[in-house]
Length: 112
Image (tube, rainbow, N blue to C red; front, side):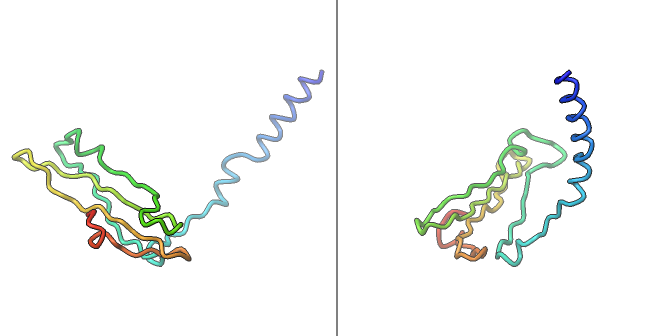
């Protein structure tokens, strides 16, 4: 009897708070420009779809300058040209200056 009541409550409760109900309340706001992040992701895909072109992207949240704030390092993939050499795309390092703001320090840090 207890398991039947529990199962009935579980079904009713899960229907009441379905994923669709929560999905209507989720909202994302693009704050990259306000935060100072100007990054164009290149995934490396072209019509050839070389394996090494499609697996090179990523990001890291690190405190590269030991100031206690997490900085952001964004990594791009690369394109492979017809002669087999990679065409470089730029990675970016953003220093966290606090208050939700970042500055591009890629060149000065020498990590582009």
